[in-house]
Amino acid sequence: MRANGRNVPTNGGDVPLDGGDVPLDDGEVPLDDGHLPPVSGDVADDFVILCQTMEAAQRALDLVRTWTEAAGLTLHPTKTKLVDSRTEEFSFLGYTFCGTKHWPRDKSRQKLKDILREKTKRTSGESLPSIIQKVNQSLRGWFEYFKHSSYATDFSDEDGWLRRRLRSILRKRSKRRGMAKGRDNQRWPNQFFAKQGLFSLKAAHAAAIQSSPR
Image 1 (spheres, one colour):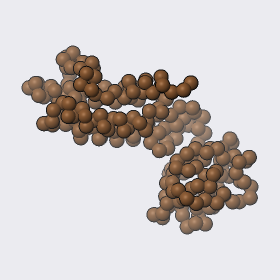
Image 2 (cartoon, rainbow, N blue to C red):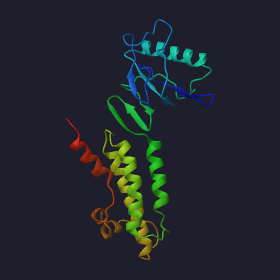
Image 3 (tube, helix red, strand yellow):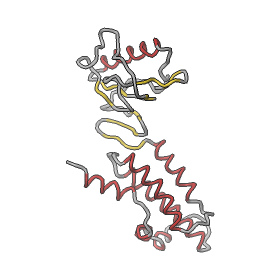
Image 4 (cartoon, rainbow, N blue to C red):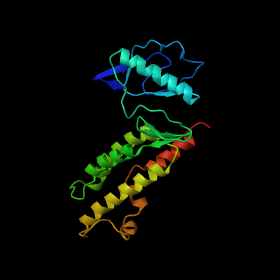
C-alpha cells in the first residue's frame, strides 16, 4: 500500500508481510475494539486480507482505512476493494486469483513478451545460439516466479509465440519474405529449438509439478 509518497510498514502478525495472504477474521484480529495490531519493520506496498465473511471483511477494511487516515495516508482508490475470492478474480503481485486457482495476470504475460520482443527482432545480427541464450535468461527468471501457476496453458502459449518469432528470424535469414508461415514449422520444428537449448516454459512447468510434493 502506498500513500502520499510513503510506504506503509506492515509487520504486525495479522497484517500480511511482504505480500503474504494472512487470514483475518473475528477470532484472529480484534475487529471490535477499533484498533489494528501495532506494526513495524519491513515495508509492503500491497497486501491482501482474507476473511471468512463479507461482514468481517468490511469491518477490516473500515479499520484499515481509519488506521491509514490516522497516519496521514490514503488507500488506493481502485485497488482497494472487497471481493468474494471463491467466485471473483483479483490480482496481486503479478498473479490473478480465483477460488483455489491462480495464474499469471495478463499484464505479467505481456511484460514478458515485451522483453522477449526486444531480444528477438527479425533484423538481429546475432547468431541463433546467442539469441537463445539471452531469451533463456528472461524465461528462467519469469518462470521461477510464476511456476506456481495452476494452468500449464499459460506457458504453452508463450512457448509457441516465442518459437514463431525465432522462425521469423530464420526465415528472413534464408531470404524469405514475411513472417513465419505453415511450412516454417516443418523447416524448423519445435524439436529443432529444443536441440538448440531453448528453454520451454511448458516443459519446466511439467517438471515442477512432477517434483512437487503431493
